[in-house]
Length: 193
Image 1: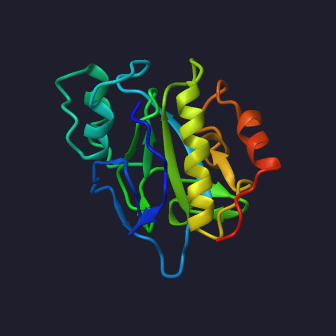
Image 2: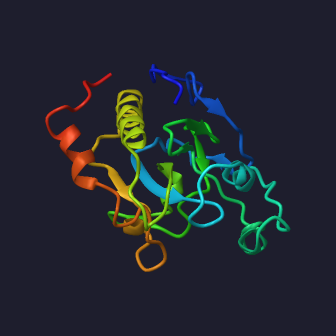
């Protein structure tokens, strides 16, 4: 894992992380700032880690001949803002001021269309395996930077894809340690910007 310090955000992009710009985004509605973080998991092919398939899916370059599952999903036009790989590498696909197509049909606290006001963070993983220490460390650092940069974001406004699309989505899954994440922020909230 490249030992970087998440130091800030410029023009919607995290400083010092790999960028892989996705076309699967557009402008947020007028005066709609990020006020929710949605955590997902992803592995392509399912249950396999590493490789370039996630980048390819999020940039509409997935080869349907490469895997049977890819043939089922290569028509999708989706992307999260961020991917945190199992080794802790962070990849950014969409600048935070834009709406990434990550949540689909969704609702949080009676607000529909979560893509409008959320930041999507994918963890490379699945519903069937624990996430890595490096992923948790990077996720915690990332949330701190986001909360400092976007005043409407607070650690209590973090949820899973399964919570905003119940019955349709299951991620980040039963192995995601919510209690660990929340314990970090209970007594250690970032200072307001």
